[in-house]
Length: 104
Length: 368
Image (cartoon, rainbow over all chains, first blue to last red; front, top):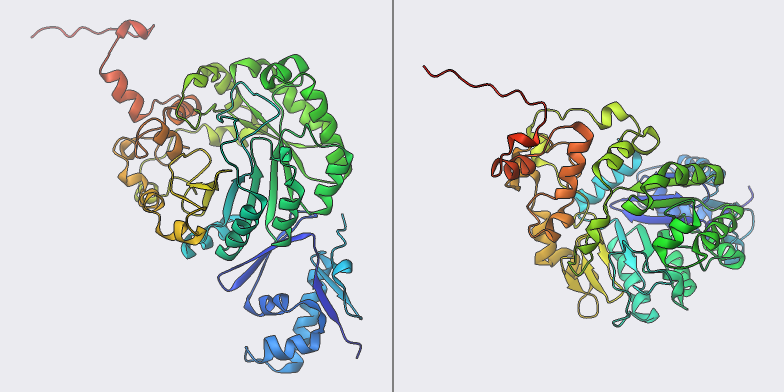
């Protein structure tokens, strides 16, 4: 399995409100709210840590879920967020310069 | 409930200031006749002070950040401040006259991920717009800037203010916005100066112009609903909060003063002496604002418009009492529905003049 790396797009606004993350795309002003599990993945998306490690440390250790199910759900989540342009997904570590590319 | 409404409700429940309006300067390159600000610099915050405040705002949970002025682009460090704000992941809306925005500035705004740019345009005619701004050539420069911003794919809204000087140009200005492919808003209220000076209120548009604006579906949506006779007063209406000022939003001046809103000049603390979160949580002024519901308003709680009125507590404050009516909003309620407010009725009860009501049939009761 190829490792996956995730990083925030720079074309977003984001803030934690209670246990949830609110995110707005600067590209199309779409507003998203992430539940606590998705928020944990989002907050760990530093471009350097593989998604599998994020799931193990930020999800499985904090929430009652098996690693397989957690990883499958996490992959689905990051693909959705990537589809909206608010998260970058790559098979290699993502540099800050790559993450700062604002696509409009 | 929309997602934004849900966010605001959650922020209210958590006591989070989800929106802050930050004026970087009161200096301006225009001298708009209706402006509520004094433009002399009386000690603006430095970039370092602003950076510190931005960090405090992010820690407090602020998400929506309006950056405005005066003209914010007059600050030489404007883009450094904007860059810092965006690095802290605020959703930034910029309010500007756009006179200083050319290709490079527009590109930079896009690169920094500004969500929206709101630009003041008062008429489609240079002689009217420039007459209001007192800056020759300002309309031309502003419209050119809008083209630069549009070409970068930025979301732009033209913001107009309805006043005596431009009331004949409202529909053409709206058409201009449409032709340029940008949004349009019309503020029907000229507000007093922050110093309390009310001389500029003479520029408020007459009732007929307000009435016309309130019958425009582009501006108000469903006209029938907007102008409907108010519903009966119920407990929900009386327990409602007046607006977000002090509840989920506040205003910070270029001098680090904190107010409930840009239109509510109740000094509530100063960020040169206090931390933002301390002011937000403990300011007696903000807590007083938060304690007010419609039920606590001596005149407005019995007004037929209480559920639908846009009563601005800041305008009421500037009239002398934050719990009192805002006459500009009484006027709007009357123009919308044809029904006078409780405040209007109370005022006219003291000076009843039958001759002022043409067509009124006078009935004389026969003596028994």
